[in-house]
Amino acid sequence: MDFESEEDCLAFKPEDNQFLLPALTHLTIWPSAGCQYIHCFSGCKALRHIMFNYFIGYDSAPDKKSNYMLEEGSFEGLLQFSNFITRNHFPKLKVIHLPVEEESLPLDAAVVSILIPLDEYCKSIGIQLKIFFDRVSHSTFSSRDYQPVPLQKLN
Image (tube, rainbow, N blue to C red; front, side, top):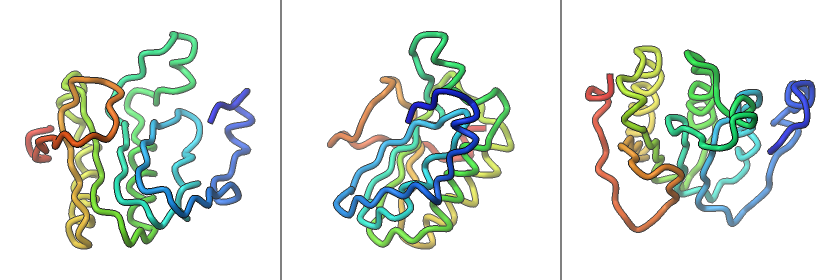
């Protein structure tokens, strides 16, 4: 989603803009600085895999970066992602991938305080939350199995 102005982004209401994609099984999300559009996918009940690229840099033109990247120290996108997972029922969801660039380490204590409850929630309903080092930016789902990193090693 690309908004022309900050007003467009502020006026956007995900609850009024739901995607009805009954066959969608894999979703890759890149966070947006101004809009938490992930909530548009809450009706996609066939989701099995979600990749949330919150800790991966965006290597586009510098003028685009400010519209894309979250402010340093802002964890709103991660909090909204956690809310998206915990407040919606995805009966087929099995895996959530959270790639982390090593340059993002150590993770802020506020980030870990969001990830630990999310991990506990996921475990309680049979979802694997896989946090892994991503040495190749912009990766997508593949048959390659990533070695998850324990949360304790990230802070």
